[in-house]
Image (tube, rainbow, N blue to C red; front, side, top):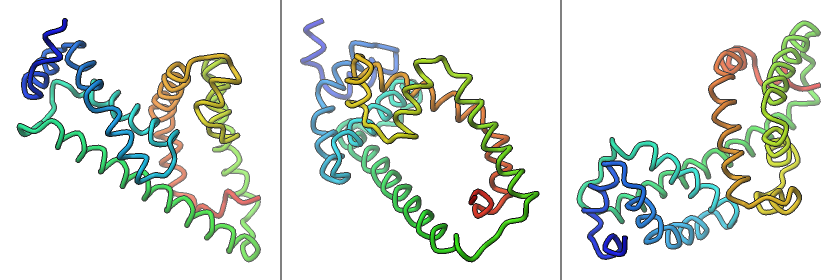
Length: 197
């Protein structure tokens, strides 16, 4: 479909809303590199920028029929990515601040044995959820989230394409998000210090 490379962004958006995979592919071809470069310039980590872009385009395809693009697709894409970048940076800062707070209080707080047991049970429930994943997905998740390996490192270790690793991580995270709602609720009820040993 050579003609699709010549049509306007507005027409591409209209086709995308009609489930055109060719339109989606063309949008990706036109903007993925510049969006990745933009994300990289803000995150200073190419793997993280690529992961963010991958997650964005998965969601972009899933939400294709309800997209609210006001005439300018390029502006919409960059605005959406900017929001994702800000959210990612905020979460990273929050995580670092949280870790610092936990570390500073670690020596001054002694949780009760009962609360330690409750926290351990929650932790075990989460471990079981991970173990319920298929062996390969579970391994990829653990390499990424527990051992902090990048997508490219995992792909090399397991002799898989980076895209396969990203797809498996997306699948694992989706499953875990859907499965741990009740765990998340319990975690909100327990102060974070209860996770300290």
